[in-house]
Image (cartoon, rainbow, N blue to C red; front, top):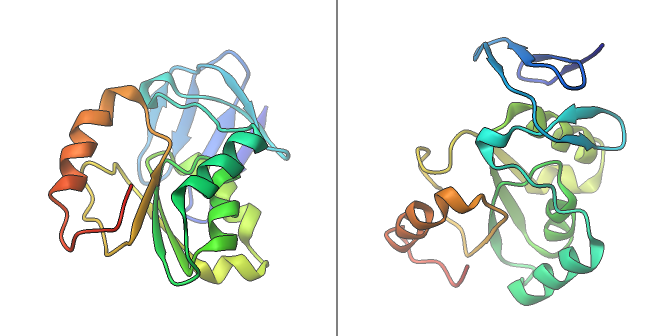
Length: 166
């Protein structure tokens, strides 16, 4: 059994094909779904979050290119997961604000950027994007589950100040 611990004090006991027991500020048990490998750890994807990791570098590069990010832009990334897209966004933008609901993913993303020059450009918000207050941003990039696409679109359309594009 593997145990992951994030900087927020969450402990994650992981057994393939079993429930994931989370202890810490938000203790709960969830059904394990698909398995994800982050390079260091393997853990189960949570179907209730609609999680899918973006792994294909061609797609990642295409998303970043289409976002037309300038070095002065603040990018809001919704659902960064383990950071495959986040790293590329950080290389282009002035700052990336990443909103992630799963603390396990936040821990993995923190590990990827810590002690790199990109770390100072990343702001992480742990929470449900539909429930948290969004700070100022210029561009929104998202890898979201289908079930929140409409509510998120309406939230973004009502966000002030108005951003450049999503």
